[in-house]
Length: 331
Ligand SMILES: Nc1ncnc2c1ncn2[C@@H]1O[C@H](COP(=O)(O)OP(=O)(O)O)[C@@H](O)[C@H]1O
Ligand SMILES: [Mg+2]
Image (cartoon, rainbow, N blue to C red):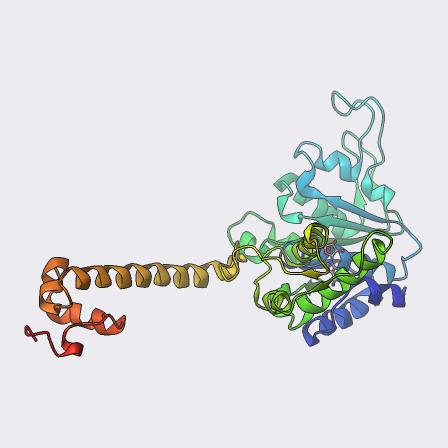
């Protein structure tokens, strides 16, 4: 599995090397793990690596997307139910925890669990026991829990939307998958590896393709809001859509930083706002100056601004005035 881990979790940046080292450590200890990180950063891949490097490797790894389960079904899916526990329960079902017996249960999007499900999960984490829905028998299991979320659980706990006691139980070990844009040259490295795979996969049908140098530079610059998932899909799409042997596609709105991570919204918002204001001021000042034929006093009157404030904008945006041409008699 050691080699397999290396071939699955790609990236040789120091940031990612640190993550790999943490995964190896975490795998040795049989405790709950909480994995954080933006969408597409490899949380599930990381959870699998922890399982397959652990002593439980020969036992099942059961992934569950909590967000995809209907609220009313979460508990019966996880803990199972007895026959007749609810209308559709014609047969008893053991549930996913029982399926994961001896192995690892991976609960993705843990933040979506209802308060009731959170309470049951806490109890299960505290003593390894649970009851099927509609059942009275307390069952004992041996399952390692790994939970993941791209939400800020500390924040949710503060807002009382996530149980703090459950958070502490899950967070015995905490692994944070870094966003691709904070992983040095990994975006470029991964793009090349994904392209190599496609070249091999389609070698019968097409001559090998390569990226144009501009694309590699763009990969390094782009913010990758969807992280590795986005990169993987992008490379695949460009590979299939490009006609020649050199791939020269465009990233979505290069530099526009589509859908940044929550903690970056604030900075990005401020930058975007400042840019809109600057663009507006520049074109407004230029238009007023054009109408006033370069006369600052006249342009300021058109703009309804006092002369000195307007004059500052003129020099800020380097709009040509008659003064610069020695003609602004009003100065
Ligand atoms: N370090 C990595 N190296 C190669 N592929 C990766 C890496 N991290 C994630 N992936 C791939 O990116 C996609 C998203 O990973 P996933 O683990 O589902 O992310 P998350 O659960 O954080 O949304 C998957 O196809 C996965 O195989
Ligand atoms: Mg996922």
